[in-house]
Length: 273
Figure 1 (cartoon, rainbow, N blue to C red):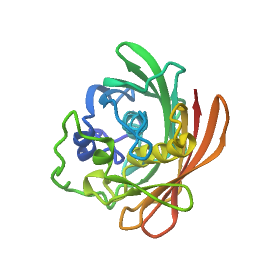
Figure 2 (cartoon, rainbow, N blue to C red):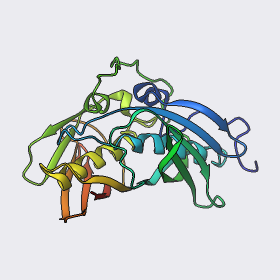
Figure 3 (cartoon, rainbow, N blue to C red):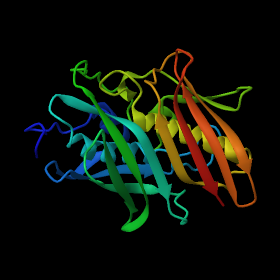
Figure 4 (tube, rainbow, N blue to C red):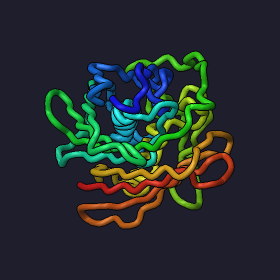
């Protein structure tokens, strides 16, 4: 392909090996020349650490991995990719009890320009349950980390999503607060929180704000904008707030606030019952 490195790397900057190991993400198929990929990730009836309700938030990590890599395959020589936008759309079928492999099939959409756009279909036990998109832009490949830290978490079927994501529910006066603890294994290759992990954290915070103590509104869509690097530390957190909660739908917003106190990522969640 014109303008593409002769031997593309097997992972993109957004999804290093440590993320794949932590969340059990595996390649099923990959075609760099065609810019397509198929990934799988196990979902184990994860629960929102704030509300205790079933969550589909971790699917954002799978979307970012599959959609990000096919965008990465199209990068110009000497450049790398980072996500600028991400979306997750789920069907009206209730996927809250996902307990097994979800498969993401990704391909690029349209020609490459200032950015690359990918689209992804999610299937579970042979049935489509939704999909998503990832838009990536290109940055110089300088400053990419050469070494990854060893994994510190031993995953089992009982490992919670809070443990996988190193998050902790906190009390806050400005809405639902979910602290993002520093964990090098959750960073991408330039040392900031992995975009899919952050997107999942935003979904958790917004969904908890929408549901309150009810828990019957299920996420139908998640739309994320990455504004600046999200650096984890003592004060990094996700803050969710409900915009409207009605009989059948709810809408909520969430922000990822870095250790420097700046808003790094924003998201909107729409939920249905």
